[in-house]
Image 1: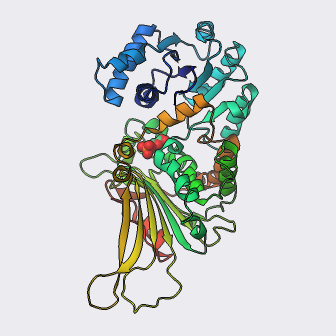
Image 2 (image 1 turned 90 degrees about the vertical axis):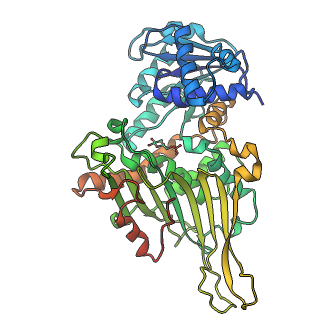
Image 3 (image 1 turned 60 degrees about the vertical axis):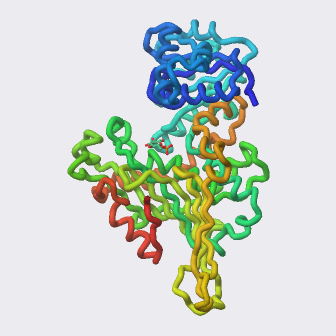
Length: 477
Ligand code: BG6
């Protein structure tokens, strides 16, 4: 279904995110017939260049990152939608010209794909020049602050010019098809929800493992570390979607209210429940210190933690979270381990008895439910655990294999005016309020992160986090 006619301004249009994600994402939606041909996409950045130069730049990025041919007729049509205005974010240059480009009657959206230090300057000038009004929408990228105080300051600043309903804070994990699917699995099936609590679930593991390191973006990453870069936002969102109560409707505030309640119910994390790691050189490839270009860095490229949620549903069921760079494989998954049946009527077979539901977020998106069955054969009643394994690609055919990128979905939601998959201001602040003490304790301490080999599953210490609870991490592969 096509969205309404729109004018989208991308601040930072010459930057990496615009090249890799925003422009290719828009192009794909255009090819899918979702973007009206009358719409305008206006690049805005410091570089002085004209419309044609930006069109050529955008086409090059789309060829590279969306895998289309240079002379693809769709690409030619798409670049016809593009324009460019050079803008001085901290001065007055370009703003009048930008205003002149905005059409009456179209949806107006402004994408802040710039350093957060420029958010204030841009918001003020948009407002001051009368380019935005109470219907305009703004999109802000992460990082949204680096602690509670800075996030609050950002929220306060944005609130001077925009209402909450106009602000779209991106967490691209929420745009991933399989992440949205968590809600479908939980709330569109009767099978799982009755068991979805501490009475029946032993524990939950959330893993986001990456094979990439931080080289090339060390200057950003070294000031963030895994907790700011991944836990405060992406991991927290996954945790919320697994742990939240059913919202009364799939509606922006109903969903976000429930997520917020989960974050508020998180217990402070004990220092003994967290392990931080940093990857080491492996003879072939450099380690974190070299990648981050900071030989003294104590920043973590890996974190594992045990999290408790203090509410009726989850009392006694721990959530184990881990995420890291340069690990053995790229894999994101959520594994729910159920409790064993209270009593076995079969003679012990030694087979594991706990059911497990694994939701694979990426790659090879799918679900795997481990169930017990009788082992075939005349040898008595032996049990064996087998997977009910489904890959979405197999189940859904080509459409299941060809999942739209998170940004495609999210940008279209901005134009549609649907905030369900965006973070509300209070949610972001609550997430920082929970991570701040963890970060502060590390910064005050002198401890170094635990070393781990590049290409491994993370530091040894993280294994202990599980072993002492008589549990095991799932293998990363
Ligand atoms: C980003 C982080 O938000 O998410 C990166 O800044 C990380 O460090 C990335 O690599 C992971 O996203 P995805 O979509 O590749 O899982």
